[in-house]
Image (cartoon, rainbow, N blue to C red; front, side, top):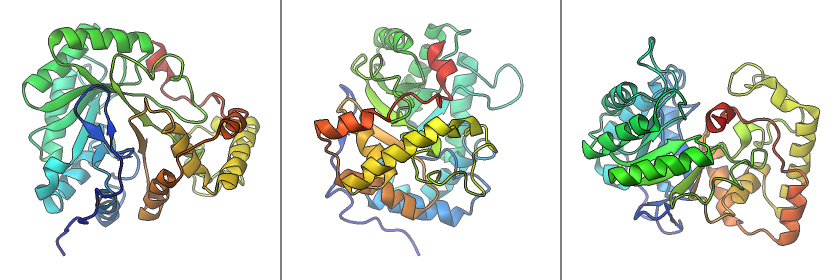
Length: 338
């Protein structure tokens, strides 16, 4: 059966302005990092993306190396765009990135002009799109001049292959420098995308209020630590210790105590732990959107339910601060410290 979007998809969503731009994003965006590759049935991805759009989620975030295997998530979304969302393309904000390793040799990694523009062309072919809405430099590359990396983003916009330029996992200093370079080129920095969660708070003092750019916070559930999956230890079949994106050291006794404490506070609020974690990230108006990854429609709906209780009292925030500390789980520290 052909897909027809819910007529009421925009009725209850309060979209947020992305920095000083004219672009608005939903408070929750859908990331396609882990669960949209070739190892998962297409019908599962279709169900999640359809439900997301019906709930007013218009922003779908990718990178060239999302899968598995690399590129597969873009291929999956490309199939769904062709079969389900062709008539809705102008209602979607699709972003992709390049910066981490994608193909062998010296031209398939980091921040060179050659890599970024070649990667974008490949991404567009996989997506079946003429353009993406946002093209990101996925990480800082200290060995490539910022002028070269940002110049490639500017070229992508001027060629009509991207509408906006963004950066991910840049330090506050590099973000300021990147914004200045892009400003001089005439392509303003739309958005920066840092990891931000109850257990990874480095952005608060240095990055959130930067250069008039929006902020899309990725990993608001701390790579799954705030998903309630680990409240009773490490369950069978979990990613912990079996996946580079979730080293077992994350589940230290101290971190598990923090998660337990936060779960107790969420229960008092009438929320699940992931719902409170998402609402907490969005409590700051400088955060444009929280980027979530899900493996089922039920998980997606649980995340969206966070929007039903977004207010925190001063007492609640003080209680949360007892447990919400940097917990040594920042996989992207090398990029934003460089």
